[in-house]
Amino acid sequence: MLLLCVLWSCGSSSGTPSTPGPLVDNTKWMPSEEGEEFFGAPPADSVCLPEPIDCPEYRWRDGECVDLAGSTCIVSFVPECFGAFTVLAVYTRMANPQLPLCNWLTLEQPSLRAIQAGDQVEVRTRHAALTAPATDPATRARMSFVIGDQIAFDYNTLIPSASKFSTNVWTASKDYPAGTPLLFHVENHGSNEYMLIEVNILDPH
Picture 1 (cartoon, rainbow, N blue to C red):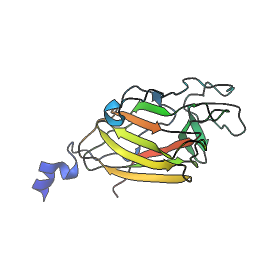
Picture 2: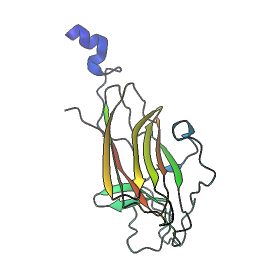
Picture 3: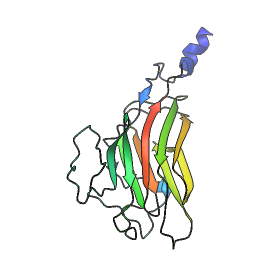
Picture 4: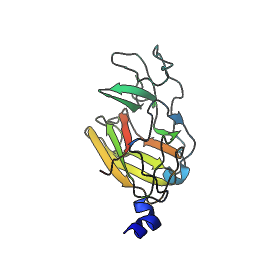
């Protein structure tokens, strides 16, 4: 048994136990043009407002969440206070629902810690009730999370649909060093809200 542990590092290729905990900082997401290999090319009518409108809260304080309750702020994505969490909130609505605010968005940041083969990574998300203009046919929404070269979470649902929390636990098939590119992607149609709540390496014990 000892020999097997030496040869196989007891389930870890580096021999060093993984450190459970957050993989992302939801205040650090930045727009990205990466991800075409996972999500395809943006459609011709894709749009996402780069700067907030009528938003006295902007620019956000570094490392802090923003409380938009009662705010006039129109924003595509924001680190928002959500109970005890700082979530990445993606908004897709304008005051005029016929005007898209953000219907295709990919965000990127480097991972906070290393992932080892066999680690389990939990991705937790939510979307509010999804709506679209009454004249539009039913269509689909998508939220995806990418770790390096793998899609770790891929959620699809019809629009319209009810509010829902969605969680997935992904098992790494190989090692990924700290700083590995992470992508969060939203495809939308209508006036809606999506949240990335947290992404954590789970404690195996």
